[in-house]
Image 1 (cartoon, helix red, strand yellow):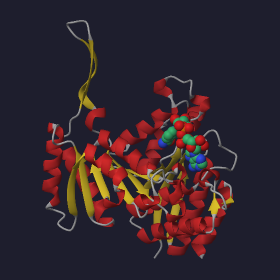
Image 2: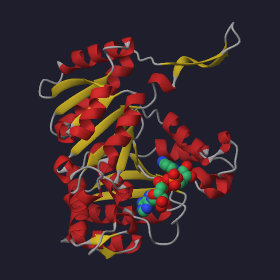
Image 3: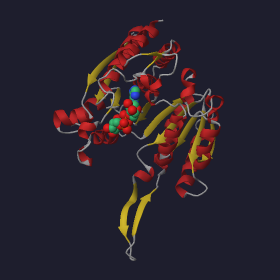
Image 4: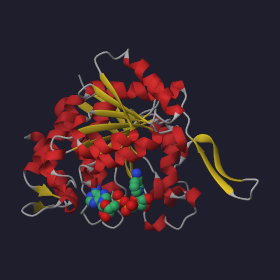
Length: 361
Ligand code: NAD
């Protein structure tokens, strides 16, 4: 029986359209192989949406996203819109999308591929075999807590204030996402906090500990964030799934991602409760190489694989795509961003064609 999925495509700006067309071709091909039918619908976001409608996130785009099973986003932004005021820039479209879909969980995998191990800034023996998923809370914590602002004091000095706050329910919902993700991986979850100093972290640790009783098959550990940062660069293989709050997650997910050394290879996902998730590469719109057939489409293709695994529950299709990526790297094909001596330099389109061939092999 053929399964049918509605996917909203948000190609956005810069290299977005080029890498999206590769990802769509790959998804179509894997769909044909496994009886999955994808109905793709394009919608506008970012600079492209500003040019067409004056709004970086037209209401129609949000509606289209809400009515789909998953959203595949590329990237937004570029020189052309850099001089616009902050509240009408392309980035507003992204923030609006996250808020509009209630995306509270951000998933950032960091996996070392043996073919690219030398791109890491750490020694081969330290990063070999690293496969980490950072689950970051995205809509709470210090970036949103009240009070916030810069206030005048009685002495005439100014005082800057932000508030780190989490409620039971906010911790529980990100915790459950993380436990479920850990189950799809090696069933090991490390919760990162600063419970030795922060009350908000004490509550975080209590709730995660309580949740653990619902997931007896998942091994849970807790680390203070300073230790977690150290362990990530000292012995990153010890981690499987990490769950943490907004601020700590912001920092740790970038550090974990950079263990892999190559921005053109990194996918991500943002998940909510009621609405579809958004799957997108970690990199930006790369305006410096846009339209030149130089972009690496692999992060976008792997975002499609994440969409299949975590959004549509189609792990076999995800496995096939991830395997095809390894195959083309084994063949020595490289886009400019991951090029190394002895390898064959290819463009975005040729990489896409090689991926399609690898899928069929
Ligand atoms: P960037 O990630 O776009 O580019 C950084 C460098 O990496 C550039 O040299 C670029 O050519 C290269 N690069 C990035 N992706 C690549 C790929 N797939 N293949 C080959 N090379 C790649 O970051 P930036 O230069 O800081 O930002 C450019 C624009 O992107 C800005 O307008 C920024 O606001 C926007 N941006 C958007 C997102 C997003 O949509 N989520 C994220 C970051 C930046």
